[in-house]
Image (cartoon, rainbow, N blue to C red; front, side, top):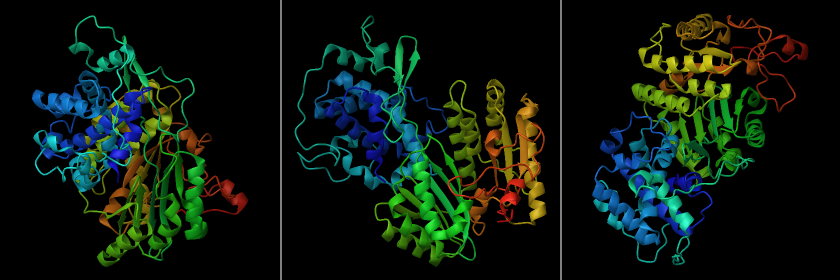
Length: 532
């Protein structure tokens, strides 16, 4: 995974706005490597791991490097190396730090950030200059590059020419530290105003501005990587399938590959198509080679997200062979075996991610974004029980306020289990757990008519049920917008019966393959066994 290239694509445009100075782009690129190396230190990251870092928190940089001398050295060295004014360099760094932090956390997913950065050290270590040894933990530096070598493949080898900045540009650079400079200095807008016609999702969003008095702050493009999660069954059938895609073009491309590998079984793949996700998937071109490899391993699971493929299988030898074969089929991707289940770590990381997603919703959020944010959390019910864990209550309390404040928001709460019990028992347990979540939200003041519940038991897995990790992911609570399930015929605020209308899983094909059989399917002769 090329962390520096990712940050250059997503964060740099937000920081620089209309200023396309190669010198400043190069400065930021090198700063990202130094910053990543600092976050790879467990003690450093631990100081703010539980904080909700705002994207416009320009003092965050001061908390990452608490020593003023170190901060001064970083801005001074980077400014000198890239022929950028020292004050401007300090401003760019302060603005980039919180944005880069959020992007790195997004790339890490459920992996602790220090572990993720240490696992991918080779991808950015060579960007770190030798002088940074005094501001970084020991062992983070690679061999010092020879003089004249380029910092990365994205930076020109031609010498950077210093051009005197115009007054307006210089004043823009002062904006992030306006409170630290001479009072009365004229503050210019660093970034252009919010675009009336946003750029297409396929291109990095240059910037977004939020008014704060006379100030404006940059916000990095918050687009999640597109992803595909599949699992095979005992007979190599497609057992579970979910994808997140930024547009229908990518959805269609992935569906075509799934159909080629699994035939009609691909129709059970559920897709969340939304502009919150990227419109490209680095592994899409290799799916024709990747999917048959996974299909040939019984009870295997695979997650493709960004530049990483994570796989698992109950047989260790088969798992290692799967990693080897996939790496050969997709050499540009990082292929890894899923590690042992860290239950508490998964729970903590999910709550942190859900909390951040809730924070980023803003005013009058889209109900789908609210549902997606709530679904990130792991509600880890005790065995055979339906009591809300204390760890989830603070997040659900926040959700209750948002649900009540947003007009016309109606959510369906869906309970799911693994397969380690009878179908009837799992349906009942999943229903009880969904009801428990609804009851808690109602107790916090949510209008009961805004919430419905449904117990799906084990019928909608997102992972395999043959490994501990897979069963853990299948035991979950999902939130969706009621409209997406076409439950207009059901009474709001009541339990949705299993014969209520469900959505077409794959609207790109010619059949109406709902989650559960209904009158629609009977008419078309395409009812699906709910146990599949």
